[in-house]
Length: 138
Image (cartoon, rainbow, N blue to C red; front, side):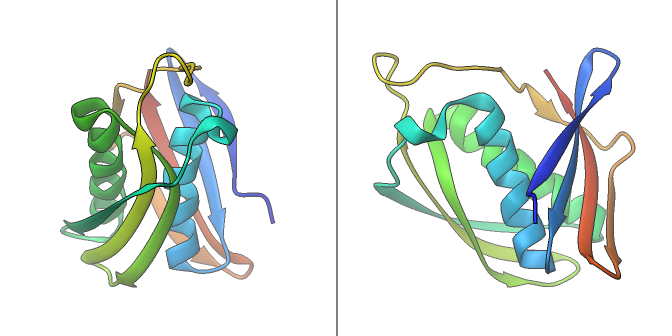
């Protein structure tokens, strides 16, 4: 199963993400953000961070999780490569992420993702698993 696909959305970037279950969906969404940001082959999974996020519903949780993941890069300059969701409910998520500090000598930024938006966000279960759509501000 493919993890995600990109679709055009005016000046922004749209993602459609897939997962066999909700945990995989959220992990694949975080993976997509960093896969678009940097060549993940050059990133080591040497540092571990815990992530805990809340939301008012599943869509809010999804956006808040991706915003937290993006903050780890934009705020702390940590490139992430591996994403594990340990616990998830409609309004709460606990996970772990792995990566390493950004090093401009080793890491080339492919795209700068500025923000995760609520515009047209969808998270749904279907007969083939889970699917989500989100628009990223680039």
